[in-house]
Length: 421
Image 1 (cartoon, one colour):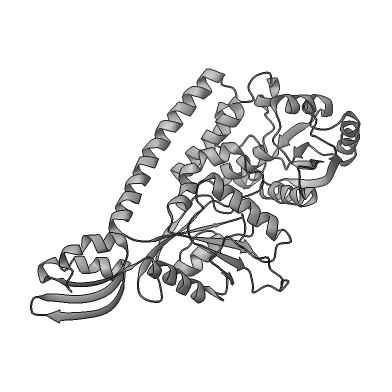
Image 2 (cartoon, one colour):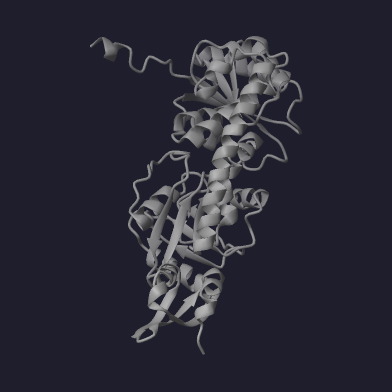
C-alpha cells in the first residue's frame, strides 16, 4: 500500500507552447502541433499556445516585450507551470524569459532530450543521450544561474544528466571525455560488425523516415521481431537489426533507425551519428512515410535534408506510403528521389510483398552471373551463395557441386577460383 502512495508522484508539467512566425519558419501551426505532441510524449499537458509574428526571433528574449506581457498574463490565468518554446533558445534568451515570466522555460531541444532520456534502453543509447544532454548544458553554464539547479523535477531534469546539474564546467567536460571514450569502444565494435558483414556479403536495407511513420511496425511485420511500436513520437530510440528472407530465397539484413523530426537539434545529430550511419552504409533505403499525415511533403523534405547531412543519399531509395489500411486521401506526392513508390500497410502487410520483390530486383541488378564447380571439401562456400545470392541451378557431380547463381561482387570474388566456363 505504501509503495502505491509513492508511485507517479512526479508533478505533471502544465505548459503553454510558444512560437515565432518568421519568414524562415514555414508552417508554424504544424510545427506547434508537433511540439504539442512532443510535450504529450514527455508527459506534459498543454494548456494554451502563443504565436508571435515577427520579422526575426528577438535576439535576447525570443519574443517582443508586448508579447511577453501577454504571455505572462496567460500563465497566471491558466495556472501553467512553464512554457515550451518551439526553437532552441540561447542561454541569454532562456535566462531573460525566466526572469520576466517567473516560471520554468524550456525549448524544443530540451524537450526532445527529455524524451530520449526516457526512451533509451541500450548502453549505447544511454551514453548518447547523456552526451547530448551534457553538451547542451555545458553551452548554457555561463550565467544561467539557478536554471541548472531546478529541484521541481519534470521536463529537462530527467535522464542520466540529472546528477550532473550541480557540477562545474570542468567536471562536465571530464564526464564528456569519459562518455566519448566509452562511445568510441562501442563504435569500434560496431565497425568490426560492419566489416564482418561486408566480408560475408549480406546486403543491408535501412528503414528511415519521420518519427511515428511506422518504421518499427514495418520491421516487426517483415521480420517477426518484437520491437516496441507505439503511436508516439520516438517510441523506439535504439536501432534493431534483423535478418529476413526475400521471395527468391536470398537473405538480407534490415535495420531500423532513429526517427527524424524537423528542427532536429545539432546535439542529437552529432551524438547519434554512429547509429544514424547505418543508413549511410546501407545498400538500399526504405523511406517510410505516414500516408495519413497532413504534412507529408514537409516530413519528406526533413528526412532528405537529414540524410544529406549524414551523406546517406546516392543509393537506391524505395518510398513506402504507409498506413494505407486507414482511409486517406488518394492524392499522394511524387518522390523524384525514389526508384519506386508503394502504398503499403505495415500493420496488415498490404503491399509489402511487392516491396520485397523490388528489393530483390535492385540487388539482382547489381549481381554477376556465376558458374562454378565447388569441391566437396569446400562445401562451406555454398552457404555464401545460398544466403547471399540467387541460386538458379545446383547439380551434384563426381568432382564436386556445380552451381549457377547470381551473386554480389564480394561473393563473386571469393568464388572466382572455382569458376568454370
